[in-house]
Amino acid sequence: MRRNVLTNSIFEAALDQLLDTGELFCKAAGNIGIPYRVVGGLAVFLQVDETDPLAARLTPDIDVAIDRRDLDRLRCAVEPHGFRHEIAKGLDTFRLIDSRPRSTVHIVFIGEKMCPADLEPVPASAPERTDRGILIAPVADLVRMKLTSFRLKDKVHIQDMDGVGLITPAIEANLPPLLQTRLAEVRATE
Figure 1 (tube, rainbow, N blue to C red):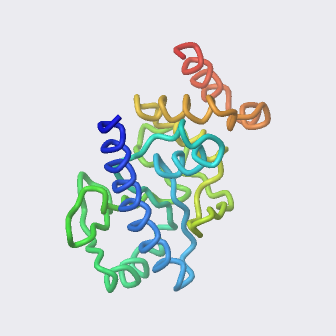
Figure 2: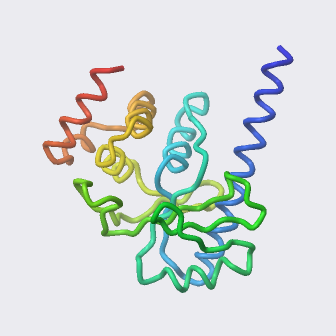
């Protein structure tokens, strides 16, 4: 029993740090009117957590989608809050100066492919607001992004969303044929 309490405390501390970083970053962006949405693993976590908190898995960082034209304005907005802009592995990132791994925000650009080999660009649907006030990508966009990237962690995120019923027949029907095939592949491995 004591181990579970310790594990829960560590998880909660990591989640709090991640959410605090996300809130600080997103509030700074929102305060000057930069349209953004949290995407990636944290957005999947928040979507799944709303349906079934025990099925939600923590992610080690924060991915935020913006329009590329807003990058300089974003830099000016978040730097006074302790974020430093860096290029890491060819990606624009913002890291809190304390350098904790969970304090890193990766930037992806709306309407652009994250990798040249990706099937689709980052979607630009209207974001949804969480209870904490963070704007996140809707499930349909997350499904498209995860099926486009299709790494192991993306497949796991698809399983998480599908396992709690977030991938509806309407979302599935709106996927292009190749992404429908990938979704079927993930479902076949569950």
